[in-house]
Length: 406
Image (tube, rainbow, N blue to C red; front, side, top):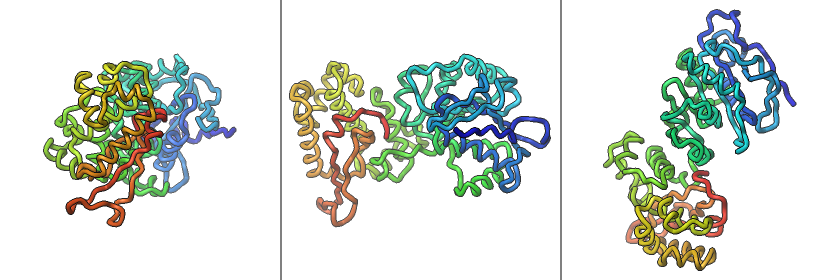
């Protein structure tokens, strides 16, 4: 295993002109790309060219002990020092990765994070590093940026924290949370720009062969079914709806989240998807209800509630209007019958102007779409209106493990 114990960046008084000091806390099975993105941008920002001397900023790797820490890819990193005096740093960056339901965070790690918070140090949770901040009870009532992939895990564990899965990173007071992956590079550029100026951040990004950092509010890259929606504000609105299937948000609340007026959002949404926000939400939730019928033994009343319908009667009416039968009949007839219901819905959509939209938003692995290219040769023309035909893989939809995003 590789040993990255190179202490050229550890904190000392050798370079008095330093303006940024970062301490890294690597959790077991951390994501290497998130860690390396931040530390390499710091390294490049710290000196002229690619000389890597910690002149303008410094960094260190902290842990409860000096035993090597394994990344999710198997590479091991040796800590440089044990926890001590968090006030030496401008930021403590906690990098997480793989989630194990049996994972217990080291008590000294949680104590160190609480100590850093008490002393006014900014703390950044990257990837699932935010879970450690939550375990330390530092995020109660705060916004927390979560990767779309780990969104359901977070919601299941922490009901008192506001999850955000439609941005790259979020700053709430002294706490910063980041979705992870390459969003960590955007976070690092933000930190460097804040302390060393935009020139330093841009110089580092250019050496790393990238043009510019994305802003915090930039939407996380979306599932394949979102790719046909170019407007990032509409894509963020779609994500807000997906994140709240059980409690559908009001259009005005969605508009506020994406910094648009209600009327602007409604116009842009229909233009991009061919559906109103209410129609999009209804389709998303009724297909989720169909999936629950196939995959769970929950009562229909419970499924109606989880799918965001006001009561079971409302769920039954929408289900019958969508698929032509009641939920109880669909469940009794089994998976094969449900596949036929999906095919019937698709045939109905193909013959209606309502089919003119780039995505119905079924943007999860089991809701994967098979789409025909939007070209004049393959699209149908209905009274002068181009219609994109959408097909759902019924077997995949009903049989794959459901996750809210892909």
